[in-house]
Image (cartoon, rainbow, N blue to C red; front, top):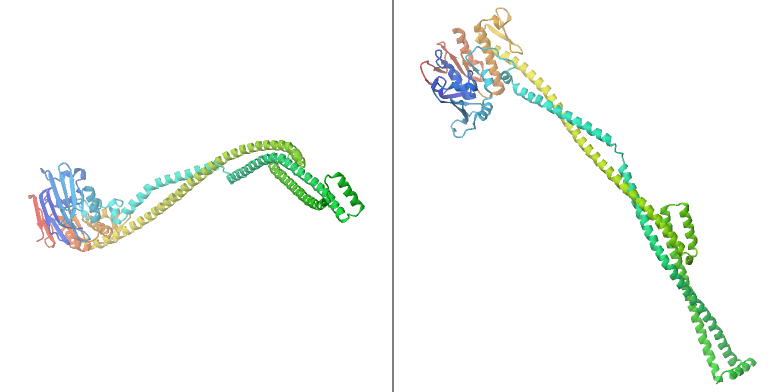
Length: 608
């Protein structure tokens, strides 16, 4: 961050403060008597950037108002590594109300951020540091130069481990919550496992119950159909037997009558044909004459010409005999068909009875009924009462058996529903346990990742801290000979930033208490410059300004002259250096001189 201009009104000592066209590189001297307002320039810059000064906290910042004024304002124009110029403008009234905005130069009406919080965030991102780092590095207020605290946030930021420690802290804060989540998930897994154990679901029981129900339902359906079939067959049997008996009697009567007419027809046929043959072919024989005589005596109006009709009558009787013979055959066939129909009806009933009987099982009583039915069926015409009685008994037994089976089916259905509920509960418990096991594994992984991250962060912080101390020692050691005219060339800086300096005269390292106060301040200045360089290396892009308020107090003129010659050469990045002192050696050249006077309320300075 390089400062290009500062404009302030009614702030601290000055009614008006204008610093314009500040050089981007080199030394800028600010000199004057005590209480001339030299330190005010640094406090104005600090207030513009952070809303406070080294001596005034945010709660007391209203004291920065110039005496008697109700409002003050400051604008600082600066640039950062992106090459753009920005302006931060801050306002303050006597009620301690602050207003602040940040904009690009020339775009005052289009601020990039407005308000304390938003501007603090934006400025931190732009310039790369905050107040704590600023006062421990680039801004040396008018105070005793002391060793920075190694564990301060500012030093950690300079070292580049502050962000790592913030990450580690956030991880450590999250670990108890993660452990609590893990304990909860583990406890729930144990509870669900216990519930599954108590559920004691028997593997395959539901399938066996469903198979039993299926088989029982099949048996019930089979028994119901067998009972219905037997009922129908009993009804058919009861209708068939009387009907067949009547039809058989009719067929037997038809057969008997047909046989009688056949016999009569053939007898008469024999008489007529025999008479005709005797009277025509044996007419001269004695029997023929006797027949003719008998006919004349007994048949009124008998004529010999009637003999020819005997042949006709015989032939007609022959045909009649064959007709009745065929009628007898038909009656016989019908009777045989009726017998076959009766046999089929008996067999059908017997099959139905046998099927239902087998479904009922075998015992002595049912075996006796079965034998009785079998015996009765041997004489179908006399079996109807036995068939009806035994069938009724079998159907009653079947109804009782079906009722028992239906009761068993209901019990099985109830057991199946219970087992289904248990199975659903098991699936629910297993799903819940799986979810908690997955969560447990996930949390364990997160804890492991966080613990690993903490270990890595701790190792990284330790490594960075060691490197930081080494770099600080190296950079401080490089500037120390120049600041001490070669009297001291080596420093030792331990992990707590305690400093020892090597004395060429004593050929040994000495603690700071063994050297003069001026030398101590030279050593501490070298350490401060090294810390500033570390912060630049860690967080700053581009050039950076330094503001050193009375860094050479207790320095003699030679030490001040040597230090001023060395400062611009120490670092390429620490390029803009403000230095405050009451007086400077006359032979030291500055890139800009700012002279303060105790009697003036306004300070306007620009590069000549």
